[in-house]
Image (cartoon, rainbow, N blue to C red; front, side, top):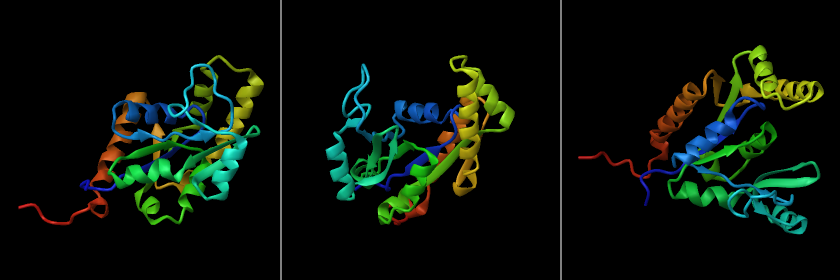
Length: 204
């Protein structure tokens, strides 16, 4: 039996906040499993089933929805995306931490999950730039999008950021290294919670 149960760390934030970089680095350092989503869209060049996504047909996805197999799911540009309960549950039971890069709607669905082990494992964090000006600078600094696209992304980001009070933790982004130190510190602190321990025996 593992010494503790795993953590389900949900990470949300607007485009440009750096949340995906944080999640990927945590997984690259083998501190947590980066949750793999299901999707009905076609694989892009270089993508592999079971590594980047679980690629399903629309019929397969709908059947899983009907059976209640998804922790959260959504429709984006006529394709379905979702996270399987099984992708998370068996890992946290084994004491493995799971990190999910997720939007505010998906995070809300996970919070409403009735499964007691999911609820006990859940920790959520919102990552955001310290100021609106900094967010705009990050979105325009990529130099890959038109002014119209940037304006839309900024509008969407501002709407997303209005949801930060719904989260347990908030990280005001500064530099990549400083952000990651705080991000990892949060995970390390959550590992010390007494309620996650499988044995309350005092060591001799």
